[in-house]
Length: 159
Image (cartoon, rainbow, N blue to C red; front, side, top):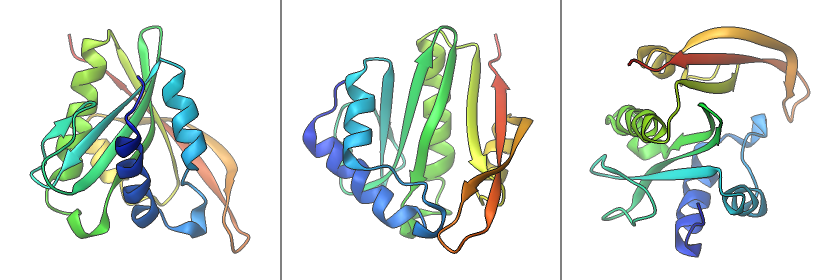
């Protein structure tokens, strides 16, 4: 899905404030643009009202986004973020539900994601049916040096 430049701006603005630089999880603008050019990547934007939209601008400020990649009958959540000032307001819940529904419409029967151990979003993912299926030991390197495990989660879509 090609993104409008201002949608990429919105993604980058949320990413800049939502991802702690200590963990090196944020992507560069070029990485986001390149992913979206491929055609099998999709994004959702969430406005402060919690409504998720595809390539349409949310009303008001952008509070969060999801970026995913489709492959056959699976969809992988590549990036997911809610701006800190909007956390705890249900935006992440709506955004994750919107991601799952959009993936279902694209034919996904399984959803995948990977996160660093200790990511506070783990409880959100588990509430939405994601279960851990694997660990990559010492996969992430922090800026201060310690390495952290990556945990792979999967959710099988309901019929």
